Length: 299
Image (cartoon, rainbow, N blue to C red):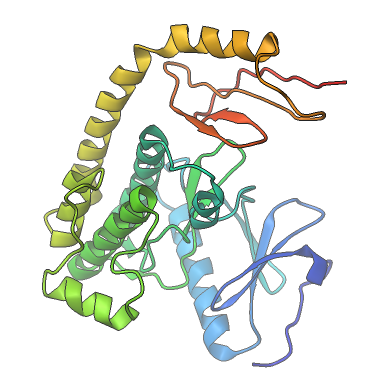
């Protein structure tokens, strides 16, 4: 590999990530991500392919989902992309202290599926669907990106994207990859033989298994099933919304919770319903987009 050449105005302190083909850095001027290749032919070809894919999607006459990472055009030596504050979904999920609430998983599953359906409808297969290719923004929304391995959307390539999507869901609900610990080639051979991990006690198995087994031909039917699970989850949560929120507000504001100095607590709610809570030592979060904040700063 040749010496890494940084784009003008970018230095090593701006780097926030590195992949197989290049570097992602936060542009201090635009506050967007500039993605640029390593100084080798294969890496440059992969980044050129990604640029081509983003530009194809920009020209699409189809409605663009908000869960596709925004493309801001080419720049010196690279491309400019939307900045996702929390990085990859894998990194975000790995850093949580508690299991991810099912409503949050279903929310992300729906967002990712909508973006992948749009990609397929434009004749493109993603080629590397995983929680590493899903990015989490400041609103805890998922954005799909990373098209360095993309190709034409042949039936086989579409099926592979769907199977990999099932594996991404499996990771979110179990915290592990399918057959974690085995070499990637051996895992691929198991899947080709129809030998999948045991899903007996795994949430969303009714979606994960059909993804692996090739029962879905597109994301259209898959999305229907994800939305069906989401509707059931929302109905259960709505029964607790008003009463539980009132209790939480009273507990925090009356000081029944010991709040460390300088801690910022906030609550995120959806327009229609409240999701389960993800709790750590610093904050309460309800993983939906519309913000209604309650902040407390101790003396």
